[in-house]
Structure formats: C-alpha cells, structure tokens
Length: 249
Image (cartoon, rainbow, N blue to C red; front, side):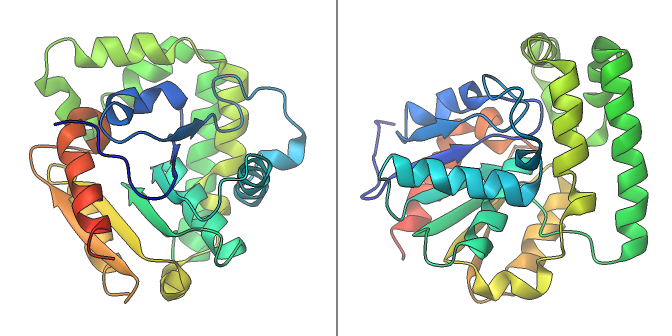
C-alpha cells in the first residue's frame, strides 16, 4: 500500500509507556507529525501542570499553533486518544477530525473513578519500584493477549518500553489517569467528526466504541485480527480504515 497523505495535517499521539516512534509503521503509509506525551520519550521534567489531561491538551494545541498546523486530524491511541478528546473539547473548532483508537470517553461514576485512582497509584508505585517486573506483568493482561500470538512480539515490546524513564512514566500515569478525566459520554456530540477504532480481539473496547457511535459525531470501526494496539498489530488495516472514513467526510 503506497503512502496516501490526507489533504490536511495529521498529528499522532501515542499511549502510555510509548513514544512518538510507536507510529513509525503507520507514518510510512499515512505521513504526519508526532509528539511525545509528558513523561515519555524526550518530554521529560516538564512543568507540573503539564502532567494532567487538560495541561497536556493545552500544551499540544500550543505546539500546533507554534508550528502553524491548522485544523489537523488528531489521531490518538489509548491515553493519547483521551488526550485527543480532551483537546477537542477544550478547543472547539481547532481540529478537522479525530481518530481515537482503543480510548475511553471516561468512567461514569465517582466510585469507578476512586477505584481506578487506587489501581493506577498502585501501578505507578510498581513502575517506580520494579519497572522490568511491572512490564512483565502488564503485558500479561488480557488487554494485550493478541501480542503473544506473534512470536517474540511481547519480548520486543518490553525491550522498547524499558528505554523509558520509570519515574517520569509513573508521574504521567498518576496525572493523566482516566481516574482524573471527567466523563465525556454526554459530550461526544460536541466532538468534531470522530472515528472510534478498536481491534476485534479487544472485547472491552469493541463494546466502548460501539457505545460511542450512538453519538451523531462518532463512527465506529472494528479491525479484524487485531487487539488493543491496532496501529502496530495491523498498520495497513489501520490506515485503510482512517483514509476510507476520512473520504466520507
């Protein structure tokens, strides 16, 4: 599949533990710009206010303004998808469209947020205490079961993640956790045109994106033979879904 640039800039935002380099397989097919989230890659030791969804979203928009990138398509995976929704809601009209991959509009109740706050605090402490041990357990979660279907994929992924700074990654998790995100379920209609993607093997997010598609602004697409990380497991299918959807706008 040859590279097919969209007629508008594309900005890619990775998920927790990743870096801008996670998008390399997609960028060969659909060129765009990438960023490192706070605490990831080269975005380290930033002002404390940046380590929040609102702070990250505002910093992203500031960077786009500085680069004169007007009304791009914002593509976000997992934590990056939640950043994308936050940025679009905080800055109406700033984005031509959104693509959110395996990302949640938020938790519905205070009880769910409190439970997730405790869970993510425990995860952050584990990262700080034993980063390698945390990664070994993290990639055993059912969410990432499809990675094990390709020999060596889990080991290669863990090796990549070990290049991160555990203290900074823990800081990012504490600040950008879905526990601190307001529920966007009732605000999905305020988003620009949005493609919500999930892998067919990721039952949790298949359900979430199908519920998101009840909003008039959201289109759901399920990518076969993929799990939570669609853009790395099936890069060409991910790009095909994005391009074919954008052509309908």
